[in-house]
Length: 394
Image (cartoon, rainbow, N blue to C red; front, side, top):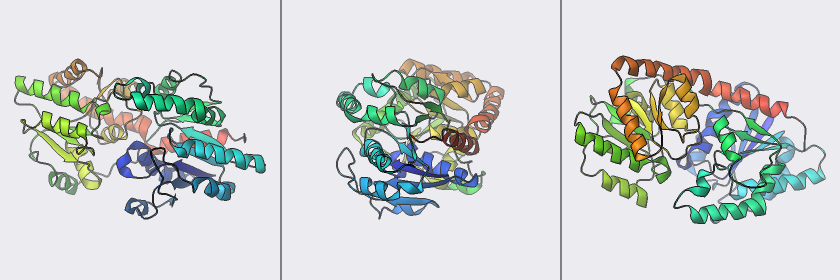
């Protein structure tokens, strides 16, 4: 089976979907499922040449809709090589543009590949209700009625990373009538085994003392991620107890207006460190060295970094707006509270009050939760079986 993934960008700085593709393709290749990626990046982007699978870069895209005029002819000339096409993400030209090209191809050819859409949480009602997103919410509403509902409702199936994402998608837009809702799960590649070089790499970019316990936030610096709640709560706890673990905030976005706001908020506390985006050994060193991983997000479809922390045997402290919170709570791999300042305060306080024996038990459960649910091998098998079992052509 040969699958084509269509995504706007494979830039690692853009977050989860691109990384999810990078995680899954090697595991799918091992079970005989080939993959190629079609993206709208410029062909000379350096991050495109670090992968062992085929990436067709046909950009750069134009404007906020990421319009890419090369998409339509490329698809018409290449669709015969694939049995399935997976659109990654919504609201940009890679979605409706792919559907439109495949519709034309199907009218001219008897054997057309199946079309699937993987929304990566973009059908979550949060995005239509969150303050500060009124213009984007209006845009999405218009796009839904004009183009996107046709992509969703005429695709062979919609691929979800967890049950919570599937359920939330039903609550957002009218005329949401997908042919099939398919929960295929999600997974990550196993972390590298711990080695001292990982710690050294992290220490070279972080001001936290080597021997000091710390909590780790590792994600984009964005309002959706609740970083402001985390810093406010940390400062409040620090005023009550100066023996807190340090707080390391790692991720891209510090140069944004929100990033400047949170760095200003933390400027008088030298226990809070900002590292910028971490990759490779430095990222894994940060995860392996932390006491707990913290992500107080207001919306998180899956959270690859959360799964990575679990895989490194680190308890995760998250909110109930992280869509995999049920799996983590049931597995005992972390603590869950609401995505409010009060909720985050309760979350961190609960962790501080846990006896060391309970923290160690939770760390063990974190690794077991990863192995039971979030390995890339399990996710790849579920995806392959889903795509193969849904084999008729629309």
